[in-house]
Image (cartoon, rainbow, N blue to C red; front, side, top):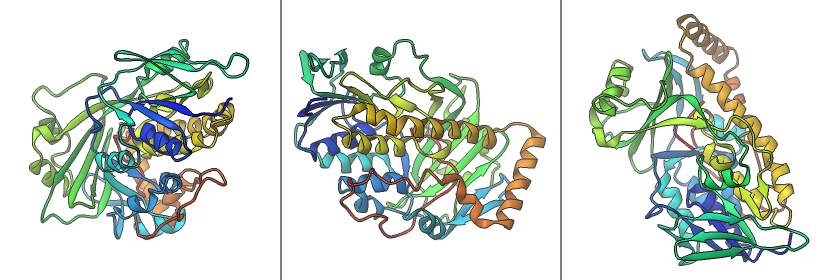
Length: 407
């Protein structure tokens, strides 16, 4: 592939902006095309685990994000009545994986990434359509993208346009695309003064709930439940949460009492069950949810997008190498996230009882076992030679089993 001097990033989410920053720092002229009228992200919070933070180290943003870590002390898994099923701590997670896990509002991360780009690099209200993926070798023609009012050419196009990616469909028209994961999610970010609680996730029958503090003093709460695709509450989603979770342990009732109907976001969950044949075609690279949308049950959607972006920046002259580095890993993690969803959202009474008993027994017999589910995920490091900032950072973070709604 010829030297990349001009790049277009389609999609101004976390993966797209991280790619834009990494490319800009390599001297590439980058334009980010975002369909929405602003970069304000849809969604509530995101958990960045040590793998993504090490990726952000490469572009000099890791330590600034680590400073936002809010989880201190113990946490873990609970049953709806409040019984602890498994315990862990911020210190144990940070020690095992070489750094904290940071929960922050998506808008905060977007602001940090956008601030690292030159003025004018991001165009909002700019719907983009891939006209030609271009070619490498031979004619070496550039890729072409249609934008409002004309066309743009580039040596590289980064498709970061989400799980419903139009670019993915254009590149791989025979691919079946995303499938419904079988459950829906709700998310809330609100102030909750005067309520003390340990950071936790709670598993019921076909339902989960999580409550976690943010650095700015607010609380991030999320829920997931097995439900038909496209279903919505007959009144409002806060009322639906009250029906499903109103009798669960504290602080769940307190969160629901403090939330307003307009504070609650609801989204069905989809994932890409069949891996793409490649993560590139011509001069186009696909990353993030567009490439491997996954259930949020490992909290890795955004984290894998960061990994994609950093890895892509190291393979600008070798897109097949980008595919080789990322496709096997993201395929494994997507399948693992699907498997975890089957466990924490199981609906059978007997199976749920067996699951909970096993969690308690394993937690008592081998406390460190709780964190092993993230071995091979949270311990990822950028390709050799890419990192230039401090690695690992300081502070503590959260390493619970899942965080819903983090695509």
